[in-house]
Image (cartoon, rainbow, N blue to C red; front, side, top):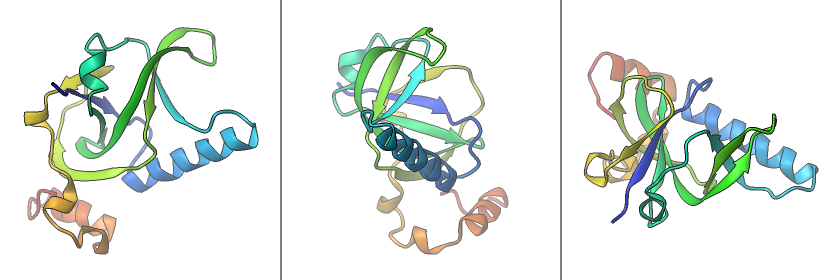
Length: 147
């Protein structure tokens, strides 16, 4: 049975910021002739590895809302830049927008059961990308939309 991961996206204000940051990261890795893969480091290794790798995604919480997800390709032992042992969460570079779901701050990551995972945004509104991001944020704050 599939299970997802949920993680705060610290230092990022929008999904576009995340996309730019990840694209720059891939570009730096390619120029350094290293494996060009997105690998997010976290101290705790998920014990439900097989369930996460069975189609699970990492759902990013940005400014208090789950807004986007990335498919998890692998979970493997890794090391941070300072040499600290950690878990490397290898992510698919495709960012999939989700219906906005409010989420309070927490530390580390959490499991997210599929029944609680927000639906992909395309399932609700195919023209969502036509709306300027700032407008969507304002309408969400006013509780006029929930995606």
